[in-house]
Image (cartoon, rainbow, N blue to C red; front, side, top):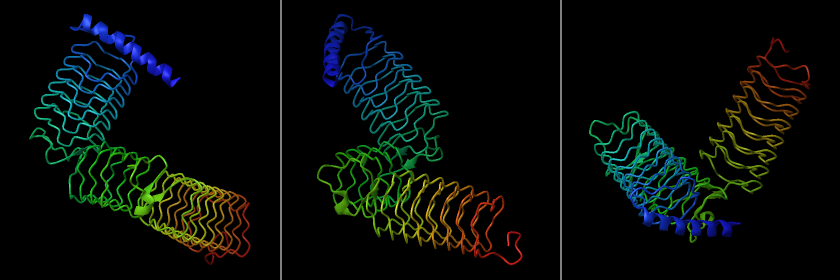
Length: 428
């Protein structure tokens, strides 16, 4: 099937190039399927490409001067070093497109979707970016002189000292991050940001969120990536000499250079059924991670960001989870025997059938959690917030509930033998 599609593109491209030669003044491709097409160096000056589906198309070095690309879909398109001067890109979609060194002088990008696009070294002088969405875009070394930036969205976009923009415009105030070599950027959230070809030599990125971040061909020599979340990140072609990856986490979707073994550099693979016995991931961000059935017994997960993590059927016996953030986490049938969850946030977590025998949940927040069928024999819940918790068919034998917030809790189907309560409480 793939070969048939490739043959189709090859044939269509040849036919189309021939038609361009016959009518180079205003070529039109209306109705042509060009998704993923290879059109390097194509002549498309003044071309009529309005509303075309050009996803993943390769248009490197293409001539698109004065082309009409309004409302066109160019998601993941490669437009590096293309010439788009005076082109019409109003309301076009260029999410995650590569516009490295592209020329966009005077281009109209009104309300264009440019999220996570790579504008590194691009020329946008005099362009119209009014109300455009550049969240997570890479503007390092880009020239935005005389550019209309009214109403532009730049949250989590990145720029460097070489980026040029109007003097009256405060780029940091709208949420963009200044990055560069040897900078201190601990715990920065660059999830999904386009950082390809970026110079981050010696940069301190400890505990940063780099989930789904494009770091291809980035210079990360001697950068500190300890405790970084690299889930699904792309580091192909990146220079990782002397990089620090201790306690960094990655998934099977994370792409490293062929000569780099993240495990040897101290990073941890986060995946279902993985063995991470006694691992130290304290203060690391693994929100949304899939750790179904993983063995994390005696692991140090103190202060870990684990919102919406899937830990169903995981082994967390004697794990240290003090102050861990487990909001909306899936812990169905997990084994947390003797685990330390002191002051952990488990609000709205799914704790059905979980084993919390003799676990320490002192001061923990379990607001709205589902604990149906859970084993809480001998658990410490003193000072815990249990408001509106579902405790149907729960075993609370010899559990310590002194000082706990029990508002809205129904104990009619709970085994309360030997339960420890405050003197004079209504439940007692």
